[in-house]
Amino acid sequence: MHSGLQLRSDYAHSPEGLSELTKLIRDVFGVDISPLNTLGHDPSVVAFGWWRGGELVANVSLYQRQLWLSGEQVRAYGVQSAAVRPELRGQGLFRDLMHRALDYADARVSLVTLATGTPNLYAPFGFRSVRESVFSGILPLEQRPSKSRRLSLTSKADVTLLLDLFARRVPTSLLAAACDHPALFMLKAVECPEIELIHLFDLDAVVAVKGHDQAPVTLLDVVAPSIPSLEDIAAALGYDGARIDVHLTPDRLGWAPEENVPVDTGCMVRGPYPPEGRPLMLSSMKV
Image 1 (cartoon, rainbow, N blue to C red):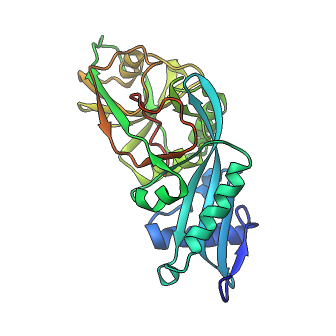
Image 2: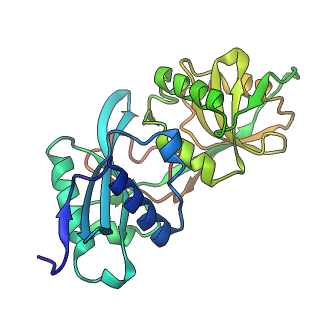
């Protein structure tokens, strides 16, 4: 079909394939996924790619998603690492790989998701944009001593602690939440050093936050076997501000936001999405 190129789908977990995918993502998006070689790759990933000899020149990957939507657990696929080297664009490689990936997904699930800054690229494949919301409000606080510690993903002990909590985590929301593999969560934290991963000792939880020592703090995710109240999370952080922004659907946080502000996060879906049209947000802790 494409002169001089070979179609492959056998490389997602091979050293050769991971090395070439790392180069492609770095060159096209400026994102370094090599930390996953140490932190751990998602074993559910399936890749579809065009190769020029030993070089990966176009790729579309899928990864399994475990979502909670309107009270039901839903298995879905997410699209990631969709990239074509600039000199080979306009030859139909992206379109071809998207169709192959979606044929694979459609045979197994009814819902496919992605996040993008270029929604017009994906609308022709049946994806539609879903507007998400940031939840904000005042949080009445009782001053308590902080019982927390910032984790480092360069510490094996801290990574082990985080992986243990991921293995035991429950959804942050029953309306709209994800319990995916931790690979993208950890890569997001590596890519964005302003995000802090903080272990809350007494709550058996790790939270991803921005600016926990200033107002307003932003809560990005909670990884725990039981979801604490937002008040308990803030107290364990030692947060002494009043306003908080929550980038999660807040129905399990024991807190009623004063407002929800619609935002365009690039979320797109293909297939049934039961909570669509309601104020919601899936965790942005993914690259």
